[in-house]
Image (cartoon, rainbow, N blue to C red; front, top):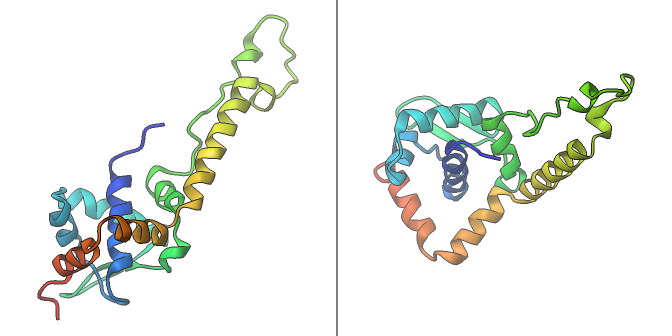
Length: 161
């Protein structure tokens, strides 16, 4: 399965928002500058997270985005589905039904072993992403990169006091 690069950007952005003080909006241009990303494209990803109820958008001179829910209540799967859509990665076209002497009454989408294998793999993938929260990633990043949180927050909130 191939995901767009906006997924990585959005997860990093959510982690940064989890680190900022409660109620503090994070400006998308500052986020884009922090990671050297195209601001307009990042903003598009963040707007998709707003539509999915993951982020809240704040207008005005101190505007930007912040998490709409607690970071422990936002999974990586939530972010992926908000950006990539709900459709399954594999779509069985039931080509077994086109074989000679195929039972036209059979539901090949359900009974095809290839379709079942793909559904099981996607279910495992989705379950793994659903177990990973923004809070968990933020905590792991803090342990792996001591001081990284403080540096990021300073860069994102500099001059906003």
